[in-house]
Length: 83
Ligand SMILES: [Zn+2]
Image (cartoon, rainbow, N blue to C red; front, side, top):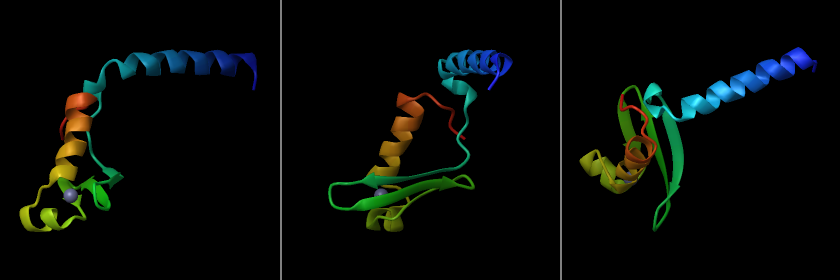
C-alpha cells in the first residue's frame, strides 16, 4: 500500500466516524440476528418491510418480546431510522 492510499483511507475513516454521530442517515432495509432468549435461541429478522421471529408467541400474535427488544435496540438505543 502506498502513502496516497493510506491518506485516502484515513480520510474515509474520519468521514465514517462523523457518520457514526448521525445514525438518522441509516434506514433499516434488511436485518437478521440470533437472539438468546431465556429458554432458547430465536432467529429475529426484518425483510420486505416485515419483522419475523421463530418463537411460538410470534406465530400467534405477529410480534413478541424478541422483536420488540431488537426494535428498541436499533431505533431507540442506536437511533437508526425506522423503515
Ligand atoms: Zn420471538
